[in-house]
Length: 190
Image 1 (spheres, helix red, strand yellow):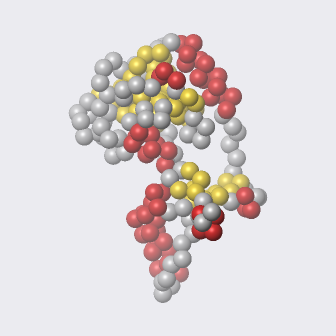
Image 2 (tube, helix red, strand yellow; image 1 turned 45 degrees about the vertical axis):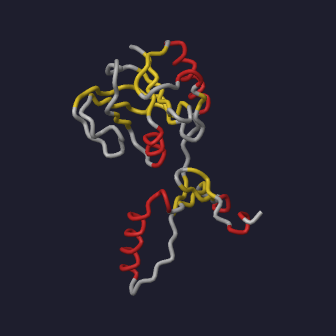
Image 3 (cartoon, helix red, strand yellow; image 1 turned 90 degrees about the horizontal axis):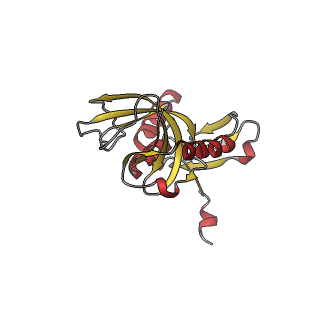
């Protein structure tokens, strides 16, 4: 088993932060590629940070992923299953960042990242998440249809989602694009 740093373009990193995926599928990578079973550190190229660790589950051709900016290019696809998601607390990439693509790294370097990721990996808990919109409609059913239309049209780039730990609704925070957003207009005036 080999170890790799896979550097992804900033657009792909931002897309991955918005939705929960079990795997990351990349196309358009040049140069040597990891083999099935190899472990990888996923690096956001522009930040540069390690945002996840994973294991290659498939290497194939002609895959299509609409979230992948390189998907329109015929190339080998790399499918990586997440083992550690570090989106909320990414690790410094140090010298791992570089041009998009796969770059071999030493086993002890990957082990050090895995130790840090494991130490920062927290237990899962339950959360309340909601999107609240004032909607004018002639019936409850029409209001629900309008709600889903707005959610679909605006999405996570424009709609705030409100999240709080289950049982602690007073700790609610708004998130836009996967980050805490201050929606209090009075605080913006400072």
